[in-house]
Image 1 (cartoon, rainbow, N blue to C red):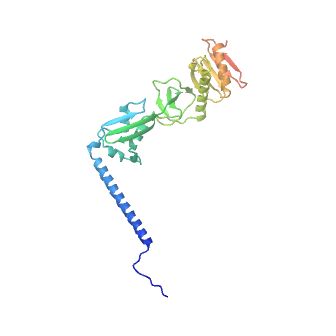
Image 2 (spheres, rainbow, N blue to C red):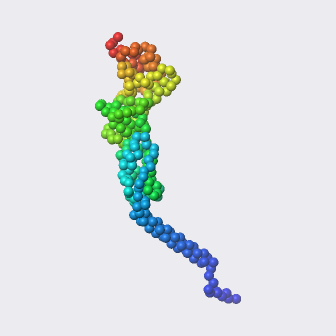
Image 3 (cartoon, one colour):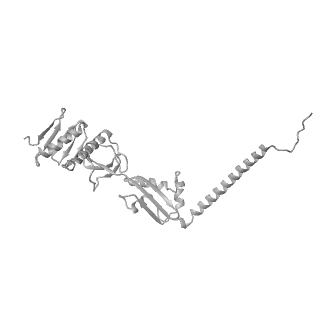
Length: 282
């Protein structure tokens, strides 16, 4: 018995393929329409005065005024918000962030660690900053440098320095510029903080405080680290070892054995025993 093929009957698979193809075409059409609407909207918005900037909202800064940060952003009142988003966007316009303004603030305001500049539709610019914190004052010959814990330079010859940060001598960075990270020997930097923190921790357990009498910490030679007390007693700790013992001994000797008007040096030799040498040789 012969089998006859009946023409005109389509396989179910062919129908499924056609439906998938139709859906892909419809998705493409919807995408193109949506894109066209967005482009048209952006073109209109970039020319409409309704979207011109007329206000700034600034928060997070204790070192710069609102006007200073607004000026640093390079954004002026009357500028179109949508045009700002597409001016060197660097991929941030999707989040309504103005990348060029963020870079301008970071480059010109040394205390700013992170910043977000956003366009708030229709006419406001939001500037949110996170600032670096002063952590130490480096003393050079004729110059002082205020830096954060990561070694970024905040100010040169600052007029006001908050209490509670170490004054460090002996570190000589290369070229330096406000806002930039300095080339600082990490071992010397960390040693200065180790000495400072040890003094502070030991002060917390004692009524007699030593830290208020510390003028500076010297880490110019890590085999002869030390600090100055009341600008009259130089303490040579030697290598930064057994700091708890050495600083405890300094507190006792300075408080009980050195006269209030006496000047000299307090040295810890290789055997760890402290020896005070008066300046007048007495």
